[in-house]
Length: 211
Image (cartoon, rainbow, N blue to C red):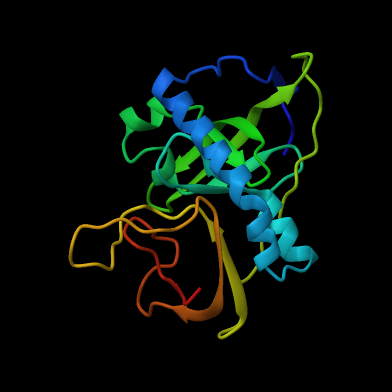
């Protein structure tokens, strides 16, 4: 992967490009909530170096109720679900440059390059970062994870990190969950759904786990 241009640094406090007033307000509220829960989350977790790195490489969508991405390259290449960008062409174009937040409250804007709804995968690259005092471009190395080349072994321990949805899909009545913006859960890999193409994630996917 090659970086096509330097990442734009945006002075903190400026209006963020592409965001309406209500979207910017939601982003700032999420920043406040992340700041208030960061220390407690870290204190409650027994994270090793690999787990901590995975947490630092995780990003949540700033202007949506839910949605998570992960950085997979030090130059800011990000992998996420295609439906987080949009489930049709109109939504995809509307959300071409989404804003995201890290658990350490860094605000970033990314641009999507590849979008495949059948795989439910999208590849993005970070193009802007908020927080510079001079507003100049500067090269940045991002925390990132290395993608696995094969599936984990059955019953192997795994962790899930992400921004859960606010609707309780397991409830028969309409109610909201009480999850934090960013949750970390532990469990085990339980295999694949038999008879389902693992590359087809247009519905719910084929990987099973209890994290």
